[in-house]
Length: 550
Image 1 (cartoon, rainbow, N blue to C red):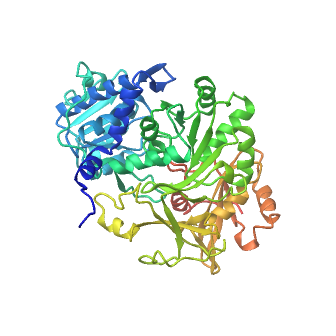
Image 2 (image 1 turned 135 degrees about the vertical axis):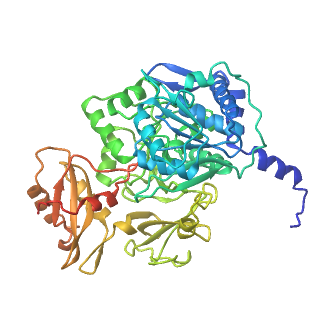
């Protein structure tokens, strides 16, 4: 290709230096004595210089264990200092960091180990039982097992050489920057995330250096986020929204401070916001609901907040009105996927008017709704009407934040990516301004008497009941109608009855008779993904043999 100028130096510099690590190191130099990381549960803190030094020790330990460029370092950790050390250390030596869901079963962990074949596995000692079981089930075992916070641990026979205490693993090692095996490149895979998914099988999503940088830029632009901020993500960092939405990735790239919330507790969370003057809270709507309830009971000073950022599901209008008054007037809501980060966004000036929608496409993204195709893909130009009525599949083009593929899964890559778009499997509608509303997933759609029924609309109606905390709507096999509608209800008030719910649904004008649930079941909780989405498929799998109350 012929250029009008000499591209050599630009290409060499950009391709090897426009990386997340370079951004972090700039902050080590210019903000070295400023606090980068704080753990309020034990009072420990790290300046940018100290965080760099601790990460360097782990990087040297990993290199001594034979970890080099493109090797996998898998870790099952709470939001913790060790999580951040591991993330940065992998960037330092060109390894691929692979945080995994600590709520998964041993069988799921074994499958992921076999898929990615990590050289080193780092885990919190709380997960000893799950890890041991996974190792017994897995076809592949990591060479090194590094245990964080071991308490009264007695190794089994043969484990002494493989199970290493994290503090011993890094003890006495150099705090100087390590020399990487090979130069970094913007296309290097730096992070591998397994989709928590609303389907049963996890998929490995590769994230490269340029994705990390531009995901950080996206957050810095949309919050906006700057070096004076303190962020606290209330969700686990092992998923895309945890890591990249106000988690370590953008916060440390921006030169701001990460306040660690090891596990979510609403009262503790509010206490940290007030005491540490947190400026941005990040969480899913179900967590925000618990936070609001705690704030009602025992108000904390939230004056430091510049915003609360939510993801995973839209805010319904009644909830949004409440949170704007109770928590902060600056609420943001993002929609996206593990594969593409967030791709539509609602800003404070959109709310509460556009609550319930997922917002408009982010600045650098293209989000469309195309006609549903049973097998294969609708063309990206085959759009549904922008009339807030016609339902289609939501597709996303996010060239800055996606690698457009899965690792070790060519079949699913071909199924989910086409002509630069990610075909999400989410169903939605949109309007003339391209505000998108998610109505269901393809797999969740209920077909009853020839009518397509979308659970999200029914769930929104039932969730508006003052005695309902949360609900999920699924289809039940029906020999006469194809499917009937069933609702699982988590009550906010123990006095709630099924008869009360039935009467309420009859009285809602927006819920015609054919969309009203035929069956109701009151339950203690619903299954969620790490990003707060309801696992409808798990509820469908539970239907067989259950006694439903009509």
